[in-house]
Image 1: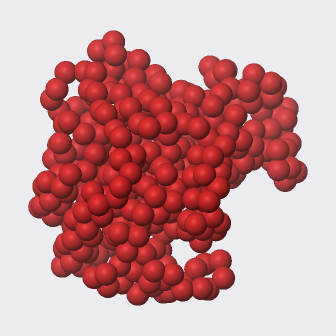
Image 2: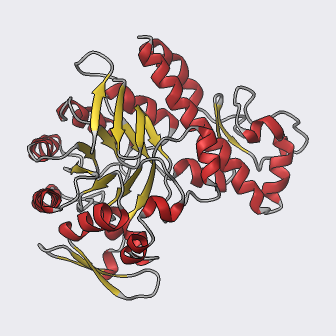
Image 3: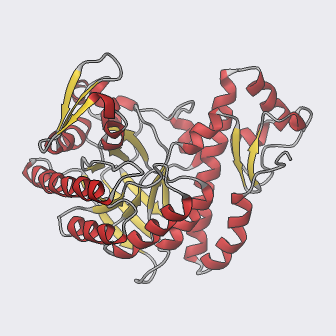
Length: 377
């Protein structure tokens, strides 16, 4: 079950909304922390709740391998298994399968691949992806199985991949309709690479199917940023206004602001948590590399304007000490901050939209979120 309410006037550009799902309500624009295998790396669920996360993302590919769909189903579904009682969206695993190009066989039926865990063979079809997500896992939002086109690729390669994604999408929609349970929503995925005409063709094909929301895929896969942003802007203009719009795999603060301006509602990315584990902190003044020697005796918090548990209690000097010493606690403390920073950024965006001042807000915020703090020469 999904209900989408647009809270700002209809038309192009940024939009404020609300998505009601089986396990709760998500205020949009919203960022989904990535909990690939049923957990957000280096963070507890209580950390995400304190940061204000209303929805998280998990991954079908990883969960079908470990612990397995049958196991999750027998243990009551993904919410009960993990202990997270708010909405969950699952990626179908198409992106992960794309990355296994050397150990997969793609066909009209689906994909056969070898597990990165133990080398065992597995099959994933559009129908099975829906069954896993809505049946075994019982998530709020499932994604169709698609072929995420790599970059670079020829236009013929992109078209062939896109058309396969469309056929798979129709099969996924049919399987969802055949399931007995009315719970859970299903999103389609627009592909088309960096080709405007293919993006338009894909958006029309996916929008014509009975999906609860529409995602933009195939971006942030190595293409230049200007090309990525051009396709974000184009795709947003082609998507239905009455359904949630999800931009997959984009999560840098400046890219989030830009994508909101284009009209997207939902986002996910591993970057905030991955950056934390590499000692990079997102702050309201830019990205800070905590390992730098300049922070050895810096008693200031990572971000004076942040109210997260890390900033309330710890100094840059202490966090640098933990990171340089290789203490596992460093990853947790930095992750808590980065997730809070991104979720606070989204909260600020929603407040700016609600008060009709987003354009002015974005003009002031973009330069700050785009720079590096104290970058070495």
